[in-house]
Length: 239
Image (cartoon, rainbow, N blue to C red; front, side, top):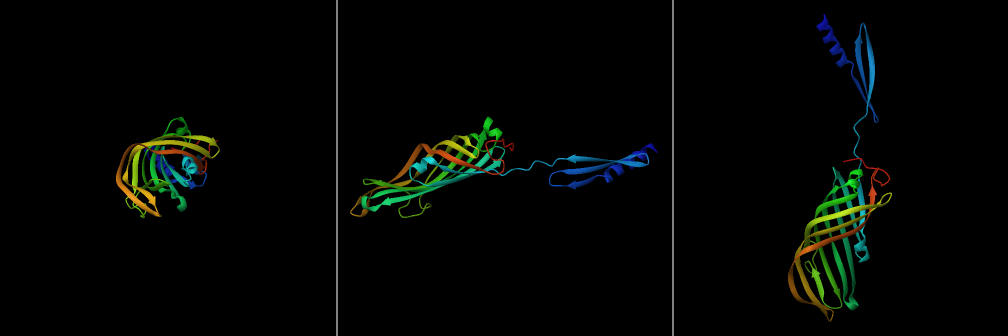
């Protein structure tokens, strides 16, 4: 009879479990047999904390000062990883004096965040990463001109490119604003063309291949933090 009672109690325990899923909690009703009656106990279980969505919009103020409008976006992937993309487009010219200031292109970077600030909240503190760039340009100020990329072509026509490693630090300056300081070092390659303006025409002087190792990326970016809880007056708590 003792074994029979244990088996009956076990089946009654399993049969009395009722789970009510609610947005803010779950209630589990467990029935325990006591003599000829059943004792019901309700246990409240908090659901698993949902992941918040963290992202940022930014602009590189170094490019802004050089009259190159640009915009960037960064998404937090979780576990201290993020992916960042930037795009720039500046196409200024003054034909009467042959003054050209043209550049457009972009880059992608994968970042890992570390340090005390990075563990307190996403997209803040130290970060390291790898990046790749693709761009074309045309600089000429009344003398010799330098053009990177296919003359008259698009970004993908023999574009210049760069790749390397970066280090940076994102400093909180307001509730939803950071300033991100980043420097990248790597390789810059691609063809470029030297020319001179003459009688309304552009006379090519030389075509060369660029092979440059050194700094290829610099940012002092104003960063706007977006997403629920993605502010500097509270810790993120999501990893």
